[in-house]
Length: 74
Image (spheres, rainbow, N blue to C red):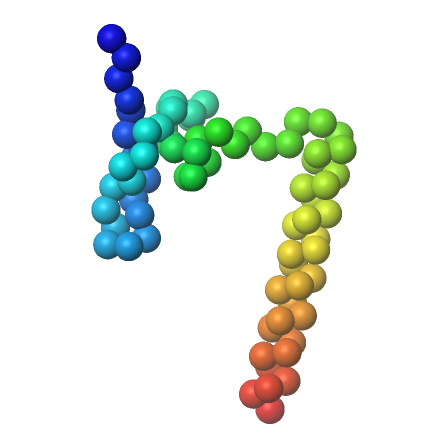
């Protein structure tokens, strides 16, 4: 007999439980693929470097957007 475990995450709309089937994560929580159930992070050196570059790129873009908003307020 095979059964599905429901995802334990709450949705943004109305804070209702997610109805997608989930998997048991390393920390014991049950998550669907949308809420990080299949993500295990980068494993190779190349993947870790790419992930680090993406964080730097995101932070630079975010800082640039904040500067533009502050300039518009003046």
